[in-house]
Image (cartoon, rainbow, N blue to C red; front, side):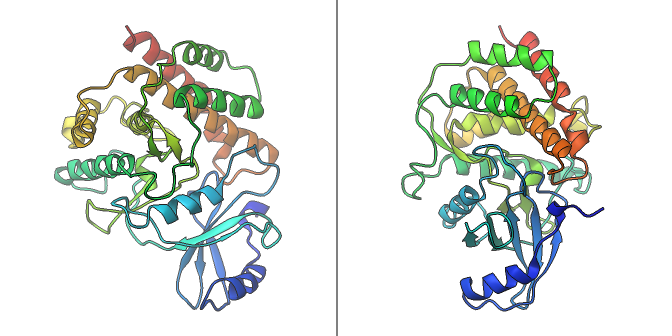
Length: 344
């Protein structure tokens, strides 16, 4: 069955772009990408060549969620930095055109990997791919936010305190049943938030393997994708969030490397990744690492709950949305394990 979320009024879109995008000519055909769980993403085929459209999902949206206008702004800001991004082409804030706000960006043709074990890559090359991921992350966190015009892209104050509050509210807004593990996690994060250490950078918010496109056959970044959750915040939130993939179970809708032999796979350990990142950013060590990890699992659990709620309401962007939503309890339990086993 085709739902509204998979549909795009290509005639209305073509008419709009003809008058708003210099040199554009129709017609337009559209095909939805597999990803884009939160914001539906389409490949547009046009006489001008391919391009990509990301839109807000239809239906009632949580406040501050699905901010495609922020994605467009950050893509524009990063155009001349070492962080690889697609070219931002046009933002349409008029929801009447196709039913929701959307933007266009260049189509990038590269490699996207969904499994952090990188089975498609020779074992001898996997280290280089992870090194490039860390390089991109470190360069992102080193961007001069004032120079690129993003000094007002986030709120001041303790990032983790603010984010714990925000994601607790988002979780409450999409709560479908009482989950004791989530309640314990929220209570612990609220009472153990580290004091603000003054670190502020542009953070991606969803920095993971499948949001990084590599050049075809090469361990070189071509484009960092999906900037919906980007903001000004604490850089170690991105690092901890990325390192979750090393702990998530190998089997599941969100595959990880938990329990696998990293050395045999040719993939660096969590300690190696953290050390590489610290070296690139001139950090001597990281305090409160278990908190950052637990927060990452909590936020992903809250996101999964939001996916479940949208699926139950008929507005989810993926047919796997119900299964993703059921990950909430699993992720919360993993965060509690970190708290119990790795905090001193």
